Image 1 (cartoon, one colour):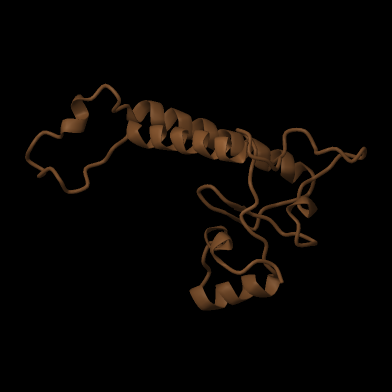
Image 2 (tube, rainbow, N blue to C red):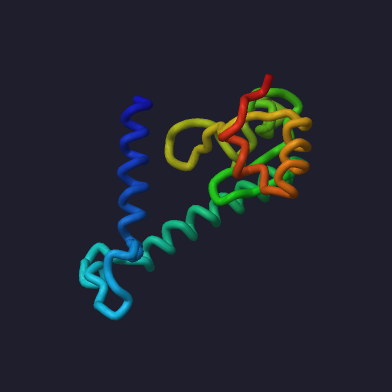
Length: 148
């Protein structure tokens, strides 16, 4: 099932990418660009899909903030939250009955769900600020060493 979900995601991501295909230096600036003649060149549809995704993330951010949990950093597709423990389940808000709060982020591989990119300590975050000078931590979390 995980391989199937990965294949579906790769197909969708590749399809979204093909809707706006930029010149990579193959065509001189004074010649017509062949991609403009293709029926699949639809940057408007791509922008609508990405805008819909961003709106969904903002709604989930607001629902999560209603539970007094605010992100420390937000990247293109990663959100950096403070946590009391190493598990991503320590971050997610729950109702009084122990169920995930409605409208917030949910872990999983299905569409609309989020995946855990990584967990780091506060000391790691401080070291990144010192080393990189105020860098967006959400861009670095998945490329570093996991929680020790």
